Length: 394
Image 1 (cartoon, rainbow, N blue to C red):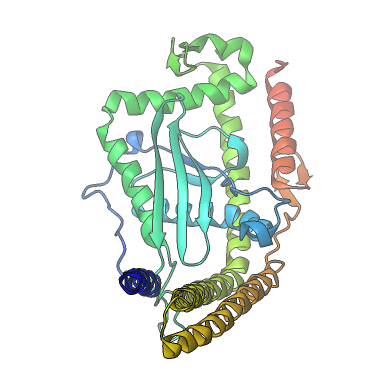
Image 2 (spheres, rainbow, N blue to C red):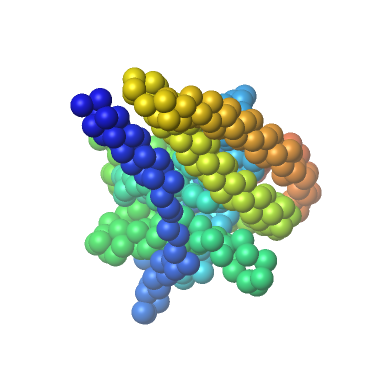
């Protein structure tokens, strides 16, 4: 009876061992292509898209050893990924102006915000929310992409962005929602955006043109006359705002181009370390399970009346202990991989350079962070509007 019990437990443990050693991950080299309209979208139906800086999805003071996430790199990724999405939308040809704009500091027809949920070289997962200028949410969705094992293969030139399929799917979903909107609603979105900008500079004139429901969604109460002199002046101010937004894109482009090579190398290193980490953990688990099987076999064998089996049991106990010790040694190896990743975390830096903007009657220099330069620029635009119209925006 004891022998049958021993055989059952040993078989069960061996089954666990085999299960632990046969876990595989399959990654494909194919990704979703981007959809382009067969006929160009009419200009008055092209919506401008603003993409915010992504939420890094990690506490900047978090301990990488505990989270496996490196805050400095996540902060850089949060600026890198919006630019890749911007390029994807631009290349689709389905939109008007597409720009990276932090904290919605300029008015746009559609806003794309995202949080980085996973980014480890092997997997990218984003939580994306899309809204239009009226406050209507188009969709909230999670996107995930697995990098191909060939994504970081140096023998394959010009492989491009490893997770391009993810960005393409976001672009395709945006287009699908745009297609579902009646033409009148698209025109209304564009009108609301313009009125929001006008209200920022001339609230005493344009506040009554928009109304909001209980959920905060905006609707057009009335539209100004096309030849309204205040509206014409605001539109000129908006053209200057576009100029600054375009200038900032040069900063983001420079940042991304400088980041391209080190970031690709970092993702490749992270990918390789992650694969090694998974392999080390799989080996550790196999050794721990194998050690447990040997110990279990040794303990159960002690009840046997056979000297040979008893001797084998003693060997099993000590052999199992050695296997478990080896497994614990693998835990130290896991720590080594984590330490190796930490050494990569300081390589991505991006400073905002001062920008000089030439206006009709003067030249202004903006300095500080992106947000600080936006604040300075909006103050300059406000002063220009007040000087040109004699009206105050307070």
